[in-house]
Length: 289
Image: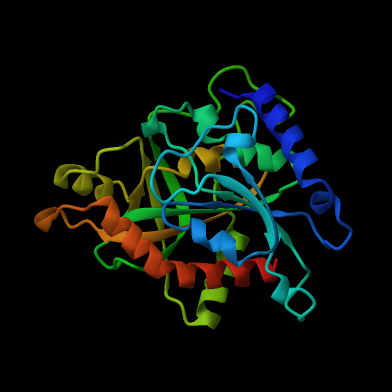
């Protein structure tokens, strides 16, 4: 499921649409990729000098069908950090919302945004998501730095003939999340006074939420949070050789002995409240890369 031709067409279209912005000499370093999860699309509005390209305009690109996913590529930068002694000016290429396996999309379609960003020069990727806390010491509304992943979707974006131009047939996954980026995020959070947990993220297919028995099982496996995205994107990114930082917003807390119903509206509400701290953290990390 390595959709090489589709990715090439989409990347060529975006390269043409972004034009001068992509090739501007004002940038001191390659762009940073940022995938925004459920409820975080508003973070892209904080970027200066935006160029917005809706997914619907990109040839063959899958559309987000879930509330809380705006559905557009956004190019821009946190301009206030440029030239302020906080590190080089870094442009961002933001994937404002994503598609999911549970919407009926294939692993190749789910990872298409990451692969397109890699074609456009992204070498560092930040992946965000909304997740349910499994670790009883974590609280809803908090943020977690992903230290490792468990792919429990039953699928892989690397199935099928391998594209040697993209990466090895059997990519190493001993360190799916970059330790240096995680350390940078943890230090930035400390400086900002933002509590940032560390934990393992387990990705499931969805769309149903987990049962009490599944919650117990996932916790026994060592997972600290569970969600319906990110793991396939991280695998595809590592296949392409990208450095990856994963940040989860813990939108609800799963306690198997006292489970309560959770709605999408509640997830979006918690994500909206956490977005300010997430935006501050993302900005601090980007400014120090």
